[in-house]
Amino acid sequence: MTATRACSTTDVSVAEPRKVEIDGIAVSIVRDSAGDIHAIGDRCTHGDVSLSEGFVDGETLECWAHGSAFSLRTGHPLNLPAYEPVPVYPVTIDGDDVLVDVTNPIDVSGLMADGRS
Image (tube, rainbow, N blue to C red; front, side):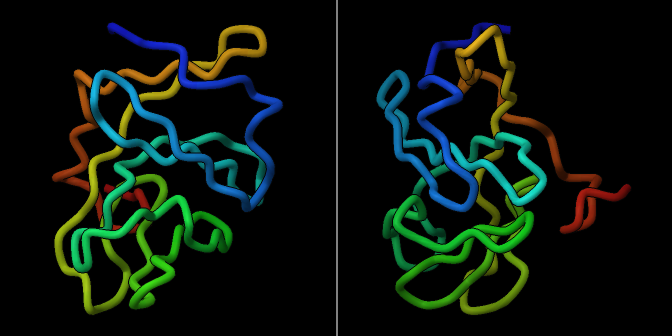
């Protein structure tokens, strides 16, 4: 895994996505309601707008522009108008650092939207 420091864990509040750029890739860093930190592609697949400006609800991130909600675990859209998933990236916590590997997105092709196989 080739992980890059994205931010500090203290920079990521519950339900307040944070946009970072890693190796030219826009990523939303999100702490869900359980306190887990996720990294997903920052661009909505429907409207090409920043997901980090959206709303967190449990384990989903909702696009502010058209309301599509994406699973933080799988990147799958949970409702229309989006129908294409966003990439999900591996996250490692090292002390207070959030490390994200944008070179190896998680293969979620065999998972349902809620993360179950």
